[in-house]
Amino acid sequence: WGAGWIGWTVWRRSLGGVTRVCIPGWQALRPGWTVSQLPASIMSNDLDPQHLSRGFIAERRADSLTMLLPIVVSAMTLTGIIVAALTFRDDWTKYWSLWLGVVASPVSAALSWRYLGRERQYLAAHLFLYTHLALFTLIMMQFWEAGAFLYLPFAYGVFIVISGMMLNVRAGLITWVWSALLPLAGLLLSDRLNLPNMGRLLPATFINFLLAGLSYLAVYDWELALASVSVLQQRAQQRRDELFHAQQALSASNARLQFLNTELDKARTLAEEERDTRTRFMNNLSHELRTPLNAIVNFANILARGGTGPLNNRQVDYLERVERSGWHLLGVLNDLLDMAQIEAGEFKIHLEPTDLHAICEEAMQNIQGLILDRPIELRRDYPPEWPTIQADPMRLKQALLNVLGNAAKYTEMGFIGLQVLVAADEVRLIVTDSGIGIDPADHERIFEEFQQLDQTTARKRTGTGLGLPLSRHLIQQHGGSIIVESALGKGSRFILALPIANPAPEPLPAS
Image (cartoon, rainbow, N blue to C red; front, top):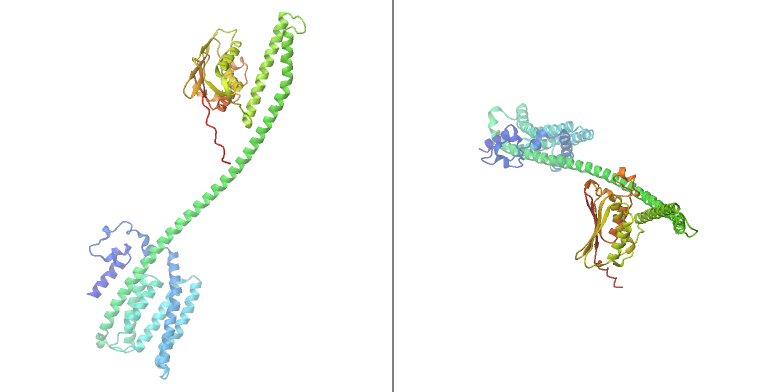
């Protein structure tokens, strides 16, 4: 029963369907299991020894030879030494096969090691294996006695394991066959065994069969374990390669990012230098132009009032035009200087309790002089009680005048209104007009520097495109915001929101 069971198992593992089902140990032999019932992960052919790469097989042969060469040679040499020590008084020719093994084993090992160094693992394994198989057969032929079966099964079982480790599972099966044929042929040829007495070999043959089958199954499981390790190693190597490529890509990205950061720092430094240069230029230019413009404006005002003598109406009109143009140029220079200071981060406001009503009235009176020749109505909608806010009076008035001036510039007829709404935490200055309006797509563009949306009408109106951007900066410096609501042909509505309460001051350090 044992022989039949082992034979059936070996056949199933070698030729049957379970060959490709890679289950370590005896799990493949559980009763009731079929190939179709096994998990899909186990059914993978990646672990099948037949699907191993040649590189792994060569590496396995080299490792097995490196491990087994000294073990087998040491065992053979040690056996010879022990036998020599026990039988040194006997005739040495009685043990000629053993002495031959002591000499031939190191020689074959040396040759196999040489071939192994040349990466000829297959030749090295066959040379070493079959040399020792022949030596062991000679030893068994010389010392075998009828009825003795102690050496035959155990020694050949070891060779089955060794051949399977050096070569492959099929080599173990072939060694199994040779382990049965070689001793039998040798004994028959040397007349040590007659055909009528072959029944005496049955016990040894049976034990050899059982032990060889178990050895073969052990080698097969060892082969599967190596295959599993190989697959895991290949997957680990693949993952390492992927990580290596990812690391290379990351290094390239880091290098690219570092390069871009360096270029960005250079560009930022260059932009800051250009900004500082422009700021210095604007400061110098404004100061250089402001002095002669002040002289022109003041002298034109003195002449228009008759400070040097009586003038006719035409002369007074010309002098007033010169004065108005001078004041306009001074306003443009002031706006340019303010924008340069804002960009340089040097612009500062000085907050103090401010009368908001006075600022609104002064702004409306100044705008009234710009619309004297047009049918435009100024509308006021003030609250019954005015709050006192913390603001820079000059800068707040400048921002409100810019918004009102923009409304007067683009309103030919209709109205311009100023509404003041007071809430719990903020006050809103709402400037409305019935002018040409603004496309909703351009609501943010109007707050960009030097932008004038209507180029056709811009030629008819004076301006640099700095009024609204400067107003937004001034209101933001006060902690507020500007919102525009407008559409083409429907006028505009600008909302200047200012906080009433100042934020709490930061606490001073304890020291």
